[in-house]
Length: 465
Ligand code: AMP
Ligand code: ZN
Image 1 (cartoon, rainbow, N blue to C red):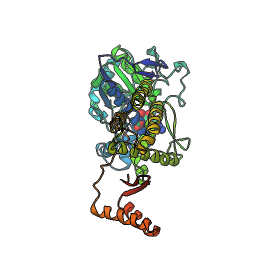
Image 2 (image 1 turned 180 degrees about the horizontal axis):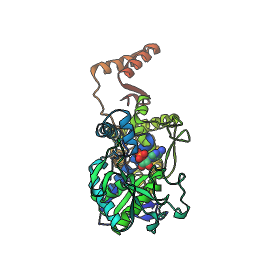
Image 3 (image 1 turned 30 degrees about the vertical axis):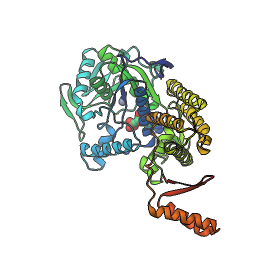
Image 4 (image 1 turned 90 degrees about the horizontal axis):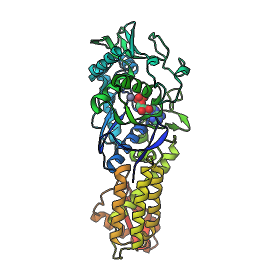
């Protein structure tokens, strides 16, 4: 089965063929570390993580690089406001960023390059662009000359002659020859950090950092470059211009962009006051896996509308999925294996893979899993599933979780003597029709993290999630 990925550049799904054998170099635009990541940013990182996990599932050896933007207008301004050094300030938010991605079970990238530690790579690339005539100096700054780059606008599907200041091009305090031109190097300014380099005193522009750092760690041509849709223009368009002008090679084979996360159908923004970060999700009592589940179960190229109602819903679904898998794990039965179940397991595995092969169609993959759950649950309930088949289903669920990473299976605790006694007492109370006492005991057990379920075969217990 072959993996196809939607390439923003061609506007089509293409078979994924990396540059070199089974190796896959992935560059993902990372955070600007001037504040907490919001859950929209986190959606983009969970998407990059799912992509990476699926590439590994398909047998690729992935090298993933994610930049940490610790130098730009926002980080400089925010650190000044807080009276902290840029390093001190960005270190703090880098720590929070790593906490967030741990909580969301995002696998660590191989390298997290920081802009402030790669100034020389950026200077080298700017020098090449100056030498080749793609860049010019003006008032101490250096700009990329967009009119020199033939393919400008191809990724973003815009006609370069239609680019207007303000609407499409970031407003810049610096003077340039053409409104479309963008800063590669910003000349030294009073009160701002600067570096004394061969090309002058100043600091790099935002776009050059990704071009320079990706080349350093992944070479001139990268297999996959990811980001959110807002990165397409101008950021990624500018990255292509800089890198291809400097190296003469194709910069990226597959461009992949994650759609936005909305909150109550609105864009997350400071002015609307609807920015949500991971701590808020935790404070409201949700496990971060639930947010991850919301992200991975929707298609990365569709807008996702976040509401507190949707996360509450997702929380219940995930609880049921966890219970299902725990039951499979602890299941005992003398029943014989069934051909039909074996076929169902095989079909589910195939469907899961073919959906994911289709540009990571995770909603389709989840539908296959939920169909399996729906069909296995009754035979698990009535004991007509064989122990061998239960094991197979359990293993399939774990295989699927290697990509989605949402399950939180709890160890089955040994029933302490005290809990056993309480359960027996409750049974006796119920037989006496003393339901008040029976309910009190249930409540006490619940307070101790034990949930009782009355089934046709008697009382079952499980640990609360
Ligand atoms: P920033 O820290 O602003 O550079 O953004 C980091 C990443 O988050 C980029 O890849 C953005 O495209 C992405 N991003 C920003 N806002 C959203 C959103 N609402 N939904 C999804 N991704 C987003
Ligand atoms: Zn970038």
